Length: 189
DNA sequence: ATCTAGATCGGCT
DNA sequence: GCCGATCTAGATG
Image 1 (cartoon, rainbow, N blue to C red):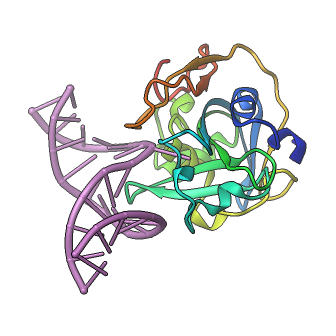
Image 2 (image 1 turned 60 degrees about the vertical axis):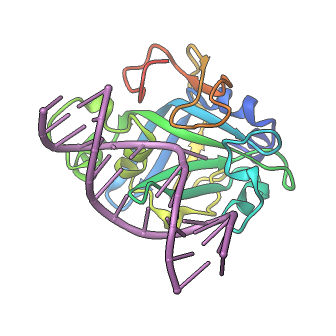
């Protein structure tokens, strides 16, 4: 997807990313997933967003649209975001779940899940990054061009809005977007 | 220098 | 449903 796609209002980007493809050219071959769950984190007026204060970590949210923002959550889990809005305006979309489309075997290996339901291999932000081999070194990479990790247009089915997960502030805002028909959601809407 | 909360997950009850 | 793991950025002193 071109940089102009990400340079739009964060809520628009979060909604329209549902159905797009997340592509990872890994050393073990290509991994592809259909994005089925996202959350918008705004700049101004969103106390749940890391951009609530402009710090060294969150500075990237003011950067170029289409940039990866990757951080460690609870000391154990890696979360992948895409920076939104024009440069100089803060915003990002958290990728919370994808439906595995290609490279399921490699995802199983990375997840340490030889058996089990393939649909749940990347059903959650921490699971997604583990299945796709995304670590903190991906922070700052450009996802708007083909490379080790990028986003490509897909087929949009249904999209529903619901409240974001795991946050304390602004818990009433319906800024989570899901394909309600997907078996790969981290939770039901 | 020290403290604390956190955009989670998996195992156990 | 509850709980502990594990660690860092940011805040406070």
